[in-house]
Amino acid sequence: MGKSLKIHPITIIFVIIFAGKMFGVLGIILAVPGYAVLKVVFTHIFQWFRFQSGLYKQIEENKE
Image (tube, rainbow, N blue to C red):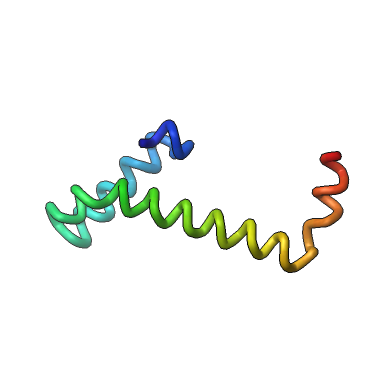
């Protein structure tokens, strides 16, 4: 899952440690899938915001 979502291995380790400290064994089990869901949701929200706000038009024009 880490390679397909482009998550660095150290990030996965920190997420598992943090979730284990906060939520115990259940947190360890659900840490990486939960992080993946949050990453996808926030990525889509940022793309929507970028499209709606017009703040990034200069960057998009330079790519073309």
